Length: 413
Image 1 (tube, rainbow, N blue to C red):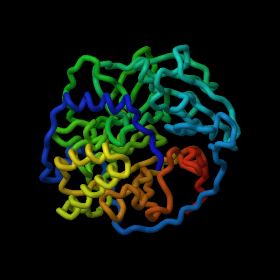
Image 2 (image 1 turned 180 degrees about the vertical axis):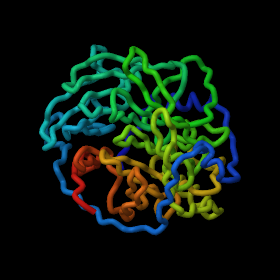
Image 3 (image 1 turned 30 degrees about the vertical axis):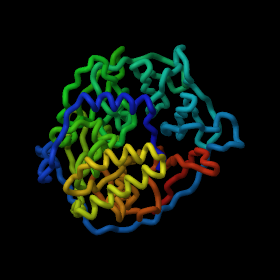
Image 4 (image 1 turned 45 degrees about the vertical axis):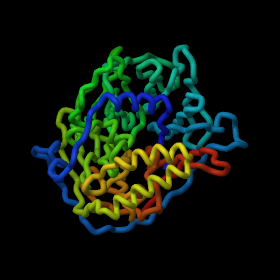
């Protein structure tokens, strides 16, 4: 799956931040996995046996071609998203512009662009599309969120609340219930939301799920739930994989009632939280984690070296240095990706046959605790965007490595 790339500017910032943070921790037991969820939540035990599904999709349209219109000669598609009318929005980082197409794939409009004027971006990092078609863009250059109405007209700019703090975003998620966004701090990294400017960073003790209120001139943040963070670690290390293999990921997705489903641990545990209540439901499957043996450690070190060698000699040199100090969790992180649909389904991807394989089976759950079945590994990917009426969008690469977006509709299983 083609995910949003981390720019050179972000990586340089992350390296500076990393030098300021101290971390070393050995995990000797798994009881910490549930420490952040202590309380009177409903726990739903899902079946252990897989029930295999057959993916059934119909293609609606596809976008992206070297021989197509100028606007769809995409350079770097960062994200895609739908509104409630079935319109698709694409953020192309190559030109820092947002393109909108109708339900049949016809071009509607474009807005944004790189510049200093109202509604232009200094550096568009990520975006969110609200149900009504209004758009919020996280702009690093302005240290603010830029807000556009449903026609693409610029409305206002909302400043970040803490310009001296650091938070690694796993993606902006629009609140279906109203004006606001959800964000989870952790991996996989999408953007560095707030950049350190004072040189002092407090070591975090959790990876929070937060709701961002954009009503004022400066964003306000309310904690919805505190995701698990291993003692002594920081979210940036876990986001980019510095120093550790098989680190627990923060995988969030927003649900139609305004709750957030997220995974933050090593085991098969999905927590569902809502503002003002915290975690109120936990979905679990009794699947056994893979222990990290000497053979697993050796295979992972070799895999990383091969991947670096394929990039360049310099990458191989750097990886050899990292490899010598690479540390491992005692078990392999089970869940690798998560997505949520407009009708409340939760798609959860497990690791594959090899511990380093992120493209294993995809389980389909419901937010009320039903297991609908699993797509076999390789049968389908988790969509880059879910939309109304079963719409899904995938960012792919076609001939000559040209980026394209394929929109389909789920018609059955």
